[in-house]
Image (cartoon, rainbow, N blue to C red):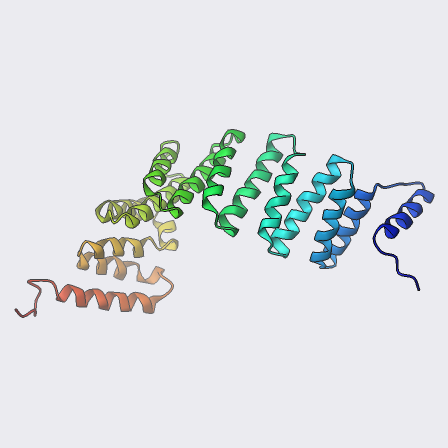
Length: 273
C-alpha cells in the first residue's frame, strides 16, 4: 500500500476537507496534526509539525498558536530550551495585547533564568516587563527576579539596590517582603557582612516565624553567628530550630563542630596555654 508523505498528505487532506464542504489551510492542517501527535505523546513529531504549521501558514493567528504550542513542547517535553526561547520570541511578533505580550516575555525571561541560567539576558527581559504590568504584586515578583539575577552575576551592590527599591514599594508583613529580606540576607552573607546579615535573619525569624522555619533561615543565621565567632549563639539557634530542619543528623554534627570550635577559643574552659 502506498504511504503518503509530506506535501502529498496535505493535498489529500485538503481534497477531503474540500469535498466535505470545509476547507482548512496548510498551516491549520499541520497544526491539527501536531496536536494529535502531542496527545499521543509523540513530542518530537509534534514539535516538527508545529514548525511546519508556522512555515506554511499565512494566517497570523495560526502562526502564533503554533509558535506558542511548539515552544511549550520544546520547553516542557523535549527540554530544548534554546529552541523554546526562539519560538517564544517569534510569537511576540504576532502578539497585540499587553497581557499576551507580558505572558510571552515572562516565558522567555523564565527560560533564560531557570533553564539556561543566562542571568545577563534574563535581567533585561524582566526589566522590560515592569512597564507592561499594572499589578504591584506582579511588579514585585519581577523586581525580585532582577535582584536575583544581579546576585547570581556576583554584582552584589546592584542586587542590594534592587532589593531596597523593591522593599520600598512593599507593605510591612507582605509575603513579598519575606522574599526580598531573605535575598538581602543571602547577599550580605556573600559580601561577608555578617553583622548585618545577623540583623536581617533575626528580623525574618521575628516577622515571619512560620515561613522562616520552612526556608531554613535558622541555618543562615547560625552561619552568620559562626562567622563572627559567636558560637554559643549559633548553637542556641540550631538547638532551638532543630526540629524544623529536615536533616537533623546534619544539625547535630554542626552543633558538635561548633562546640569544638567554641572550646578552642582563647580563655575557653579547659584550654591550656
